Image 1: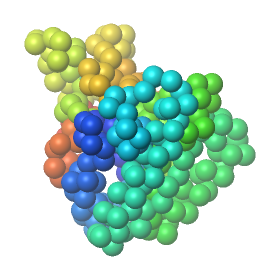
Image 2 (image 1 turned 90 degrees about the vertical axis):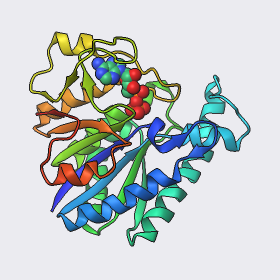
Image 3 (image 1 turned 90 degrees about the horizontal axis):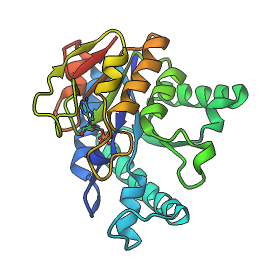
Image 4 (image 1 turned 60 degrees about the vertical axis):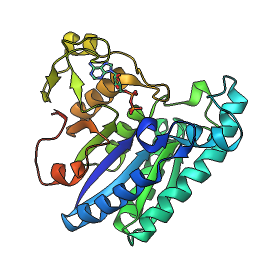
Length: 253
Ligand code: ADP
């Protein structure tokens, strides 16, 4: 079987103010079943813990101080994991929770432990849901963004494809929310200065990376020989179409 790592951005998995986007997770669970029938296993890298926890703790906007963010991450991770587990279980699939810090991939011994655990989970038919351990990850031990984390997870499990589900259908020649002349880029074979210059920050309130962290993670994956795709989380059936080898979003090879 092949393995697909799917990174899900905060703006896809959460709804402003209310927390977790159940209908998205339910749809993903159905896609996971379809992927399995096509011979693909799924590993999810999901953001959204802080955005899920904030409303539970009565914060109407993302708090500014680190301990409050850590508290939101801790509460929100439970809400988020429960939503994944319930929706996937309803489709007959078990999920698991894997929280990583940069230490876990920086030291060889812990890298190997993380690799063995993830590999075994996938073998057992589980859909691991991976996130950065934001409750204990302060700046110096952070991956910083889940685009980078997804690339490392794809390397850990020797993925055949890494897909980033974003709030945009792929890479443009400039940020289309600012530049009306931005053109869609369906395929990237070399990450040069022009591509890096085209990638701006996130324009959403909950996104953390923007396009630049996605480009950097695609570059890591190109070096590792793992193809990656950026496409829209709103594009229903995109993962199954990718599994069938169809063109969706921007492909980095
Ligand atoms: P997510 O949290 O869903 O991963 P982000 O907000 O972090 O999403 O990143 C996607 C956003 O990056 C887009 O919605 C867009 O506003 C911005 N962006 C900046 N430069 C580009 C570009 N060249 N092509 C596409 N999107 C870009």
